Amino acid sequence: MPSIKAAIVGVGNCASALLQGISYYKSRSTDASGLIHPSIGGYEPGDIEIVAAFDIDDRKVGTPLHQAIFAAPNCTKVFAADVEESTVVVKMGHLLDGISSHMDSFAEERRFRPSSLPPCDIVRELRESGAEMLINFLPVGSVEATEHYASCALEAGVAFINCIPVFIASDPKWADKFEQAGLPLIGDDIKSQLGATIIHRVLTRLCEERGIRINRTYQLNIGGNTDFLNMLNRERVAMKKISKTEAVQSQLETPLAEEHIHVGPSDYIPWLKDNKICHIRIEGSQFGGADVKLDVKLSVEDSPNSAGIVIDVIRCCKLALERRLSGSILPVAAYAMKHPLVQCTEEEARVLLGQFIQGAS
Image 1: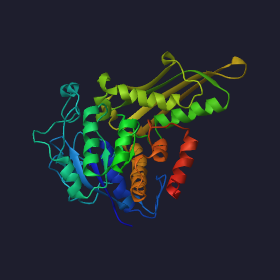
Image 2: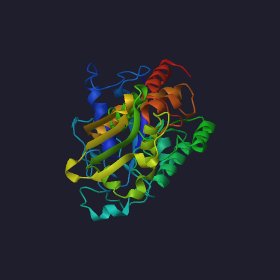
Image 3: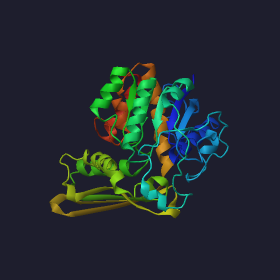
Image 4: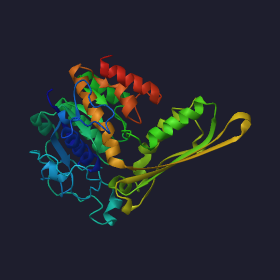
């Protein structure tokens, strides 16, 4: 199979886990444990090639990609230290709104440290690298920066995969731009392989299907990576809360009143590093009005959990390119994203994705 040529903006923990995963499964071609789809349209994880990367941190800019993914402030688990050497050098991106000012008060090894270099020409780099798609791993709240990179993808003629909660693929105006350009668009806000959102959605739907009336529910998340540090600025998490809340509300026939549902990031605890801890509580009423109370705790390495889905989305995006599909690729987004253009249940999404992989339009 030909390689899938992808570019990345944001060489953080999620990028590190993705690059490690590509290397890990390439060297273990007969061991597919941990993968949802070992092969998608004949493409395996090892067929993915990262051909360009952009960041703004001076510990990463100008550094070979295989080294940059392990540079501070990255703190995700190292499960493939022997990542294949890359000829790709991380280029200086556009800062715009990519860093929250509150991070300046934290130690350098835990926060971003912006480079003073001028930004590169993103469109030219994408074209010259031969990238077929651009994957957005920017920090939550980077609205201006995400829109800038989406525009660069359009100008360069590459597909766009939006892994963060800025509404691009779920915005009909942006979806139309990519459709008119003949380019696939997949987003927004990546789900994890077994994360807080999918567990909350499945439990919510289970209650609905079993006749349980949900009265109140919350989801509280804590972690110690730069994502959680960034989200201490509550102004940056508005879209994140909308994305996560709608993902849960969509599983209910009658959505809960705002005061009866809370879904979102809660706090930053440095020593947790890339470990994310989630607490989910559902309070409901069953037969005869009797109470039902459900508490779930999830502890998981956050970035590999994300990469387990991204590695499928990249291969699905390649299929969309081969089939000349354009605009929001709904079957992929419904399965892989918290805030797709159209919401459905996890069971419906799994069927849609399977049909898409098999060739259904």
